[in-house]
Length: 213
Image (cartoon, rainbow, N blue to C red; front, side, top):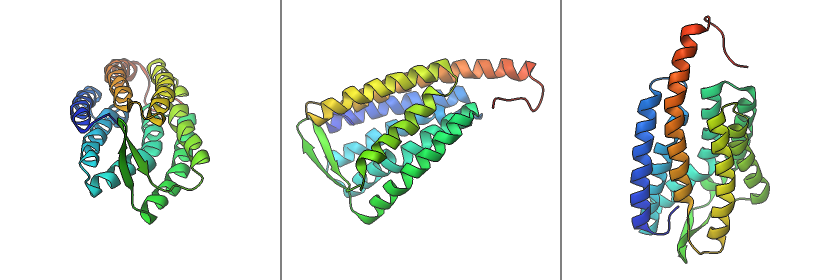
């Protein structure tokens, strides 16, 4: 989320472009879903420009990505890239969080209104506190337990950034989630390139059937 429709358009286009580059670096490999995450985040910000304009469909699409999709997509993408058992467990947690969020979206229309330099969304999610905690644990836990130095760094930055962005958003001072998305996208762009080189070296030296547990 950004502080205006214009900021969402600019930031969303830039983040999506980074996502295209990261996906091209990853190629058709198990790293592709995570490398393409910036593309999803950029599209998410572009959709929010429509929320600023008052488009009802944009509110729904924005909420679907932000609520049930991301807590499932991120740990699943980490598992796809690393094959770590911890990432698989966090994916199950993300699915457990995504189901009630999806049900809430199906039952109630999404409302949104400007408040200061932010947008305030009303979804009517029951037990929002435990679901938010599960959301954060699924996403950040998968990154922090990935066994990859760059992904762990992304996890720490995402956690600290979410704390700061959430505070600024609640104060209605300014929405800076788009800045966090941009930082995460640059880190994933660099990770995709490093991983591609590492994967090429590993495939040349490891026997068939070897892998991480």
